[in-house]
Image 1 (tube, helix red, strand yellow):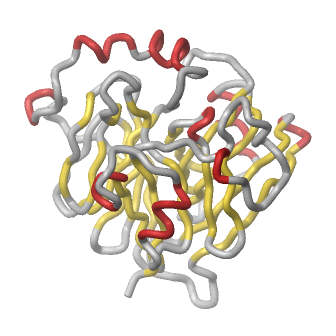
Image 2 (cartoon, helix red, strand yellow):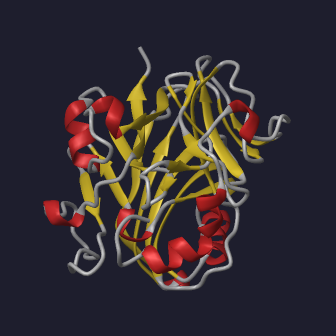
Length: 273
């Protein structure tokens, strides 16, 4: 969750990170996580590969003022996890910067939690088929992944078997924290579609899960970094960031640059060729 405004909560919840060694293959569980939801490699006839379902839309039933939902078919679009340092050669960047540097990407969202002390990712992460350096943490118990064969899934656990996986992003299934904040999540719905969701404000992850399962028909959810880190992009249609303390949580389709917090990791939707 990025800056000093979010640090007291993040540091308290992830204080154990300071006691963990840097990532190594011995630092994670030897057992891969089981899949709990999957999206297949076949694109249904006539169905769009990418669709902006909701753009800064309210959901009064859940007391949400703004929600963005990007619907993606993994058979048509690769869900690609990328790091700012790989794309731009710096540890953190904003989503508009990443989208400008990866012109083939059509949509994106911020991704992993990260440590403010050393900037490292918190939880399992794969980019381009390789496991990135990260702090393992037991709270990061859900992993979204996409494979080279056009399939995607969500697994329960803190790591997955990397064989055949191109990208993976870990997050939370639950967290004992209550504050009206921006939330982001990846989910796979009952039809096997992937949804990139950002919403503001949401009281806690259980309320976010309730919205996702009831309104978006999500069968499995990975909660990603939120708060001021939340940002979403669909090329030519949506570019929003919700940095705290700057009046950014507004019903606009294009946020000013100061509303985007630099973060280390992203998930992009890139057309398959």
